[in-house]
Length: 247
Image 1 (cartoon, rainbow, N blue to C red):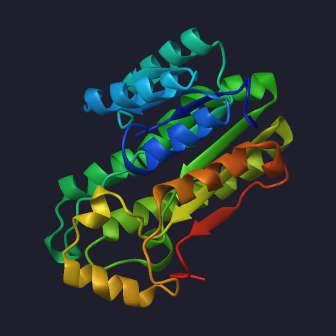
Image 2 (cartoon, rainbow, N blue to C red):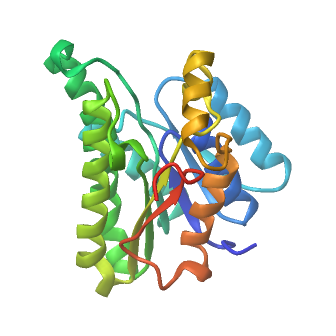
């Protein structure tokens, strides 16, 4: 129970990688706020699973691309928990088009959630972390932000932006008891990857030295490491979970 007594919020915490992170933090003793936008059923099912083994989880619905709604969510979470120790900025979307065919709405849809959302969530909680002289912020980036990808200029830009923001915040907040890191997954077995046509999956697997897609739980354990005492001397890092796709 490395995180007993800690409180955490995971954005996009009810599905995919976010679900695995929420579960892993709860299994280590943290009280977890599960943020989601519209899929209340998935969030409620996860909450019930966490409660079934004696953990505590609350629901924190909000559109993190909207600052007022994010602020409202923060007030709800702080009222329930009293304070927040761990923030995992995981929520993200894709909307793929070649740049020639990409319109402004498609660009903004991805940037507003993937990059603006990280700003919004960090902004509404950072003052409390500074006041208590403790905080762990983990941003979920992507291998695509490191290597780029055809048809994903918006997604790659958003994730690269989060990686750069992570380093800047790590420098600003290191003297205030707050560690800021990112985890960059490669291709992970989630709905997003399983929806890729089989022939494309085969091409991707041929580029991955470990010859398999990652598991959401493997990403989650990296997040736990950064939030647990073992990660206390790590800040400003982007830890890669990609099977050797980028090294």
